[in-house]
Image (cartoon, rainbow, N blue to C red; front, side):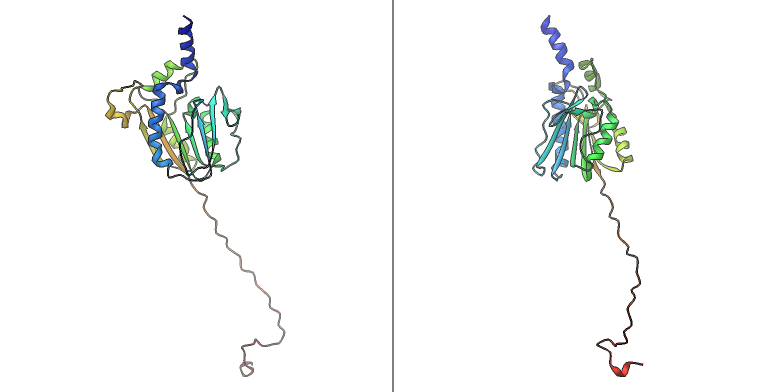
Length: 235
């Protein structure tokens, strides 16, 4: 009886550490790999939903800041309340990766705004999540009944990013149709996959050309001729 209770408690603690979502995370990582390998910079930010989430192997980034969003707080490289602004300056990261973080955030829209704020101009914002329209959403709600995830519609996220001035470069569904180990209709995963990946780039600020206003310069008249002027040419 106690073992059954423990399994029920564990079921609602961290569904992102379960085998089905681990397989979905692997599929999302493979879909993002070609894009992320073309990114470069000095600082990158990972916001994940699992306590053991690790950043992807990207040799072009030397410094990763890794945070896990759990129980309404950020854990990992620093600790802070998740309903407050991210403790970073504007334009701090060339890459921001949100792995299912919007699904467990107290204020998903505010977290997305903060991710765009700390993203440097020209940087890449990558989002992953469980698609709410498919066979995965009932599974997620059942296995996390105490606090079900807030699944996000990808097209709404796309509109929010585009309204903020970002350019969406990739949006696709990935993973199996069902959470089972051998999901049927594997050929339909491209259109009905259980997860999605979204990649957007923050536009660079346009350079403002400086127009120097002409200022008249007064040259004092001293009665002397320029060195190249002949006396015969003087009036």
